[in-house]
Image (cartoon, rainbow, N blue to C red; front, side, top):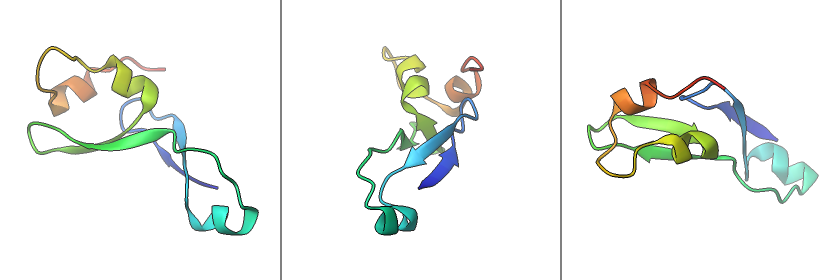
Length: 70
C-alpha cells in the first residue's frame, strides 16, 4: 500500500495502484485527488477536504490553507 499525506489536513491517504498493491493484489480505491486550482497551485487533498472547498467560486490556495484541521 502506498500513501501520501493530504495537503489540507495532513491525514494519511491511501494511493491505489502503487507498487505495494502489485504484490498484495489489493483493489481498494484512492482516498484523495491531485487538484490544480484556479491560481495554478497544485494540491493533493483527501475526499473530506475536497468536500469542504467552496463550490460557488473558483478555488485558490488560500481556500486550501483555510481548511479546518481534522
